[in-house]
Amino acid sequence: MNEEISAAKSDHRERVVVFLAFLTSEVCRAACRRFAAPEALAAALSRLWFDEIYVPGARYLDGLKGDRAEDAVRRFQACFTDEERADLERFHGCFELRLDLAANRARGRAFFPDNDSWRSLLRDAARLLNDLDPDPDRLRRLLAAFVEEAAARDDGAALLDALRGRRKLLG
Image (cartoon, rainbow, N blue to C red):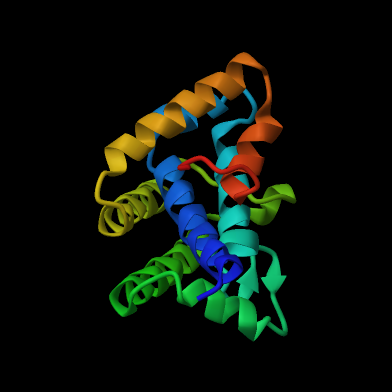
């Protein structure tokens, strides 16, 4: 396997793991309240998952993806074992269902209240992270330190770039 393919594989996996660690970290979500209200943060994180991180998904947050790049899907899936892919698909399906239950579009934008649906999603994400990473607490500590650093610099954009995988966090 050449280095470019290997790097792409590790990038996809890192993006999923970092996203799940952030999503399940109360410390990270609390630090981000400086940049966004909890509902807006939840909406931004949901958009990130559907639109950028979970490549095999069939929809963006606000609509269908249409034609998916099958090569990108294959590269994404190659980063995970069969069991992990099944777990990811299950989590994504639950996320999609909860998204429909949690979203309130009456305000003209995605709005995610702190309700049972959202808390259940956080529990599912924590279980998936535990399956994908042998030491999720270490990862959450790394992320919390990064978030505190971004908050000290008043740099919310750095945080989103890191979650999108534009900045390596686990290197």
